[in-house]
Image 1 (cartoon, rainbow, N blue to C red):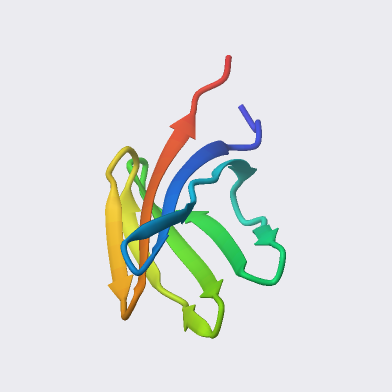
Image 2 (cartoon, rainbow, N blue to C red; image 1 turned 90 degrees about the vertical axis):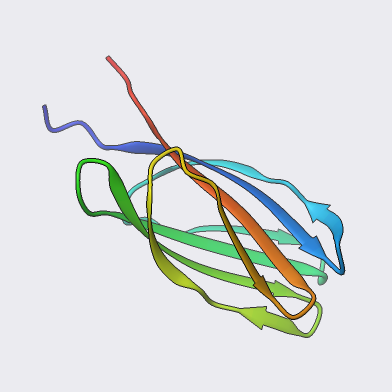
Length: 99
């Protein structure tokens, strides 16, 4: 009891249908995680647990001059696909159970 919740965020980032990155992050709730690949890609994610089986996800994805900042609720273990113009983000959040 009182242990920090840990999560695995699996992502696939596509630009014009081509995979440009597929980072997997292990992170804590309510702490911003950021990935930068040179000047071509920046990805941020913040998780805020809601119900026992769901989480609020706030993201920022910048590829070149394109920016998307979706915020959405999802269930753990469910893949979400978001598309804006030439950008596509696939994201799945899994809760890591530790003993």
